[in-house]
Length: 287
Image 1 (cartoon, one colour):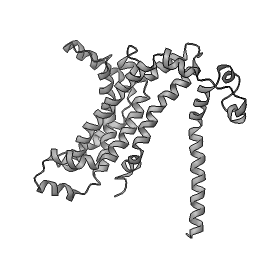
Image 2 (cartoon, rainbow, N blue to C red):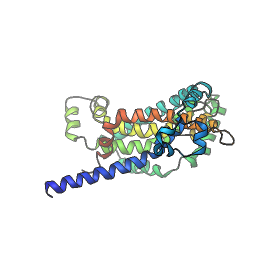
Image 3 (cartoon, rainbow, N blue to C red):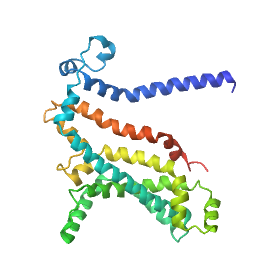
């Protein structure tokens, strides 16, 4: 391929990716514009009217003020963080230990147990809600320790169902680490604990960050698990946004403003860790 053909191919790829990115961003753009329009104008015309007639619009930020001051969004924000952060850290920690064992430790049945864990990826989270809830209630009856209705219930459920994918991603990445490096550390007298914390874990930061992005987004945007296991006494953002909508959908503009505020946190997490994202996902794909 000549230099001209490469430039032409690169330019076409750039145009295609730009168009796809714009199409992907259209719902977010519409959400943002709707949250800033006056309610009467937003009811009469679609959000795209702003792009067609940008000078004829009256902007209004009262929906943001209403959401922040009257809709208990701050409390729900804290609840979402209380659920999401531990539910992201816990599976990463335990999955990293498991992935290290499946990669660098030799024991009977290693591949079999790893296959069983990967097979758990097909188990739907929704299908386990009733058995898990009954297990929590039974545990409370026998011990007196309340789990259901607490943040810990959501931590356990999210962490348990995130573990198979986390182990799979982390093991694939750890397999790219040269085994000679591990053997050299063992010759120098390093224990498995030391090798894990001082050698393997720092090297695996891209894979850890990649899964952290996925897990944070899944838990932050979750409604079902938080509603079933935490309840409405500690409402997360998704529950509060649904409550804003109202019985007849009259609060849709407040939902637009609240949704855009909620969207800012996952975006911040993604852009903070994006440099690790592709490296963590593609490592181990081809060896």
